[in-house]
Structures are given as structure tokens and as C-alpha cells.
Image (cartoon, rainbow, N blue to C red; front, top):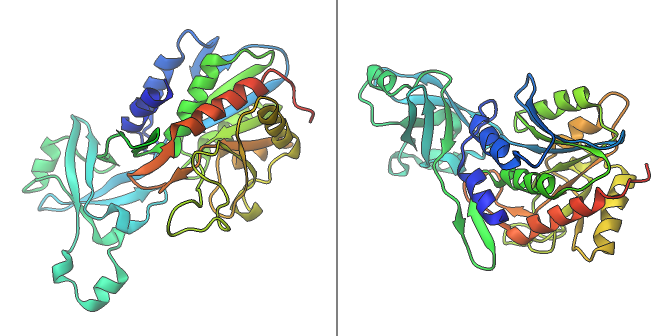
Length: 345
């Protein structure tokens, strides 16, 4: 069931470079459903369903945006750096999980109280450099006793919750939604091709795992599964993000105004034709912001025909992302059906 799989993945913790707990869930879910599972030097998980000589790479990044401890002061407060694209006000006063050498412990992100800010400080807002993590320690030795040190990864303490109308909220739907979509695709897949399900690392800090795995596998074509921004809620207009949650997964034509991926028209047509033939709703996107693993993959060696299929997801890069489970299910159906027929490249 997609919802319960996403619950497990969203509640797991795995910032860029520390994706191990997510890796373990994926490995358990795929056991017995694929021919091979391996880990490469970067930490990418590569699941293979063997077929003929035509090679398809399906990619979903495991990592989530998070934090890392960079300094511990004498009073036991922790300074940190942001890993990935945080909007600073989102972090202010969040509760967090620190993944130390002695296991998990909890803290809160603190900063100067608004009551003590002057007018100019209120206008500027709190910056990451002004924040700190309070774990309840009285000094630096207390912090050490908790197993926290410079380099300890930190994630937001937030759990998956169901909303109305088959919609859900949680942290790290970017990109545990894509991971769930890819896991279930690999579980259901019956394809004549050799299909690599690649669960990549360090996407949020530079598409790194996709770059190295694509070079190693050298696929004939590729599809990344990620999330994308809908324009269906207050604060954003459809003219700026012309897709909606609950209307099907989104196939990318270009993202980041063409500075990232310009998708292969052949791969886009392959997916769109499959969806139409099977009565599966999909949406098309010309995006202006953000990019995905497909950008790194499509530039591999002499080039790899690629696109992205993504469930629309509200409030991404926050601890309260929202999506419609039906969009993930439709994405699985498109990929499973498409991978029965070779694209005309």
C-alpha cells in the first residue's frame, strides 16, 4: 500500500550524506522483487531487474534537506549549517532530531525572541547564522555525553499524518514520494528491458549520486522520479506553476527555465502516449524553478534521453509537505505500463 510505504519512508531520517536508514527500508522492500541489489562507492542503492540489452535507468533520491553541527559553545549550544535549500524562517523554533554516536536525541532550534528584537531586526527576520540548537545541555561536556559532536547530522522532528481526501502531510516527501513510487514500480514491473532502479544520494546538495551512478551504468534512457510544485493554493498562481495536486503525476518538458533539464521529446511522448492509452491522468510541465537528478543523468557521457515524472507536492522543503496519494499511484501505473514497450529514440 503506497500510503503506508510513504509513512515509513517519510518518518525515516536521512540527510544528504547520511541516507543509511532510508537505504535499509528500500533494501527490505525490494528483497525478492529484483535480481540484484548493490551499493556503489557513493552510497547509491542499485536494484536491477534483468532483461535484454536495452537499459533503462529509473532514479529517485533518498536524501532529505537537513542540518549538520558545526560548532559547540562552552554553554552547550550548537551552531549548525544547512544541508540543502532551507528557507530560514521555516527552521526557526522547530524541534529537531540529532543523530549522534550514542543514538538519537532531541533538541529545539532557538534564536533571539521576537520580544527582544528591534524594528530593523524584525524586518530582516532570523537568519540561519543567528540560530542555534538547544539540547538541554549546561556545557560542552554535557553535549559530548549525549554523543553529539561536530559533524552530527540533524533532521526535523515531524511525523507523517493523514489529511482529508486521501491527502497526507509529512517531512521529506521531497523525495520519499519519488522513492515510494520507484519501489512500487520495481515491485510490479514486468519488462523485457534491463531496468536499474537507482536510489541516489546527495541530490539536495548537487545531484551527486545521480551523476556517478549514471556514469557507471551508462543507460540508454532514464526517468527520474521526484516531486514538483503545484500552483493550486494561495500565494502562487497557475500561470507560474500550471499543475494541480490530485490531477495526476507531472511529466517534465523543461525545468529551471531550461537551465536544468530539457527533456527528451521521445521519452516524454513515450510516457504521455502510454498514459493516454491506459486512461491514466498525467500533467505536462514547463518549470521555472528547481531541477532533479535527470539533469545530471541526461548529461552523462554522450547524453542520455531523459525526463522526470513527479507527484505535485505543496510546501516542499518544509516539514509539512502535502500530496495526494493518487498521484503517486498513477505514476506507478504509467511507468509499469510504459516499460513494456520500447521508446522510439
